Length: 250
Length: 299
Image (cartoon, rainbow over all chains, first blue to last red; front, side):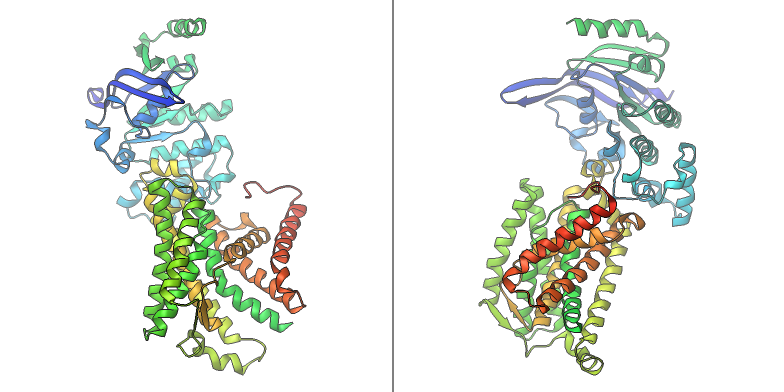
């Protein structure tokens, strides 16, 4: 029932980059609808437009043409603060997802939308964040500066921050790329929890297996266009691999 | 030995404000702000003219501090609005502040010996204990600095202060949180340059005059003091913003005491900058030899 509501509507979206007289269509007439509670896995080779799409949804780049609506409102009508209330982007690089000179506690505190609504004291918040970080093995690092955490730990922190944001949609740009297998597993289970809690997740990945086995929907991009789209059990890893190899041959 | 200690402590506590201004901008806003050189003299100029024309001390100080703040905000505005390099934005405003200070003062120097001065209130204490030590002035400056320290620390610990620090340390992440990065940079530079202007006011009162050239060389001095403080204090022991503040104050005092000692021992004024450079290098070398390696993130 939840999936009836469109969280993100993209129609005929085009984004071009011009460098030294050469124009590249990073996104070329792309149309896609993402529903509330979806977990969309986006795959594609380098330069297929995956990250550009996430940047467009998070309001970081301007659209050349087409429509991009967040919760039914055109992104061009939304301020950066309003976009931040709707979507939250977690970068591939763990160093980009936190403030290095703030403690882990302060990183969570500044991102926690509930702080304004609830009257929790500092010690109450400390307990709350302690419990939140306990399954991730970071509960004893609350007072430490984020810059002293490892890359994997910072990515876990970034995902925890995502869970505290008011935004309904979480954009994940290859969140597991820089992580070792154990940290990647913890991150994946954190993403699953976020999705179960009702957050819409759009995750970019290079791994075709992951794109099929995880999430609720898989979308493959090539040259800024959708070339494959399947939902649930209809997703086939062989079909995706075939497309993958075709592109390499090209 | 007491004389250089006295001079170093008084000057160190006065100039700690401008070192704090530079350190906050540099370390927390990631903005190497050259404006402090201009806002210090602009603050001193506004204060001198107002106090000379009969304004009350609080009015003169407030206007001076705000004038410095406006200079900082202008640097921030130029940078965020016209996307001009941070250094160039600062240089432009320093040039503006210099001409403006000259125009405000109407001369290159204004004497303030007959004007009201906050150090008058501690004159009796200055003369009563040790004649070589201006104890009253040192205590007054330390008290002012303590109040400033507490206020700045409280501000940086609020949700808005945290937003300011996020905007400086990771602007892209700050945008993800809905923080208005340009506004925070402009506001942050306004505050830091208020502090630099206050340093100019204190310096004028201490010297008994305001000179158009009093800001010259302040940037190098503040950078040297900041580096010394950051190298000598243990960074990991305290939260980063407290470390930045403590290092600025500590570095300012240590630097001024060392320079005063060197001058007292007969160092020629012409060699002062050479000694400053050697001093900073010695501290940096000492820290590296103690750690055995370069410290990550040093600039």
